Image 1 (cartoon, rainbow, N blue to C red):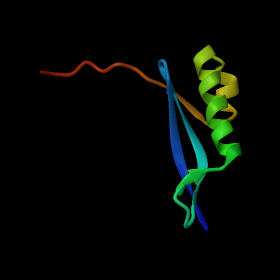
Image 2: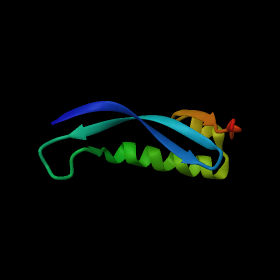
Image 3: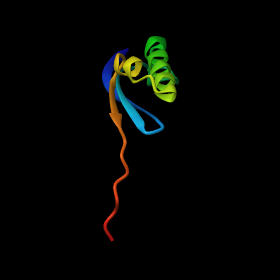
Length: 73
């Protein structure tokens, strides 16, 4: 079994959070997968962003604001 760190992005509304998680790889058909703790952390970040609790979301990852960009034609 090996594990490597990866950044997962959680998008909700006009915000996105970058959360560091461990991806676990092994010989099972479920591989690669997240630990229960990391999956719960991603769920908590999504819930915090959904209600606008940026302080809670920022305690679990880096939070960014998305802004539309006008495309030149």
